[in-house]
Length: 322
Ligand code: GLV
Image (cartoon, rainbow, N blue to C red; front, side):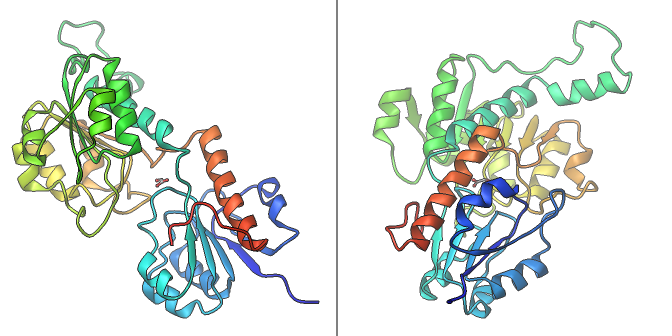
């Protein structure tokens, strides 16, 4: 009997979610629900596997791909795939799939939540309360920024950007956007107005970054861009660490170049607790939970399972990146 292909699931996944694949594959699965698989272990898994089921912390670089001579398919549990060198995968004839169209609303909710949290100083003031530092109702106690009727600038107008704009309409916000291409339908549907990146940064009270991480978008928001923003402005990153330059953001928050920032993503994840940004009361961190709702995570798993079963049954593979 021919051996079944080896599927390496490089993150913890409860057994019942793997069940539909078991007739087709031998499965190895990372068993620690509280710690990511270390990169070294991941590279061993990539070397062993015929099929990999990956998450964003797993870096499938050109080097790793070169060594992974059995590897034929990768299902990535995310819509973003900056953790995979897709060009190298394509060259090696490896299929890569992702999870499109199921997490935009959920991530837009978190972007909006972070805008509210940073604007209204929610985490900072809750922390003060826990620490017994709430002196009672004071006229200027914990005063933040209004969100309603303010100007929101969205950098990167994909699905998530459009859904943030839709939510902003309910808050009577003026919405500007910057994108590689004009999005006429979004302009009509959500009353958003195109601006150059520089003008958007100058005019916005809140700036939300929503681009993918690529060579062009790395350090898209750095010292020069932060300097264009209003001193009362608030920057939110729910896309990927590295799009906003963390050192420059730290300086901007300490020097009062901008008022506050919030970020769901970091260059290094999990972010070390000694990271300078975490020492600032005007910085609101989140542990990369943009798509983390039960419904959405199960829908993402379903997308990957659909790609994997199609591959294993020689059918057309949905959600292919390459
Ligand atoms: C999560 O970060 C994703 O890209 O889906």
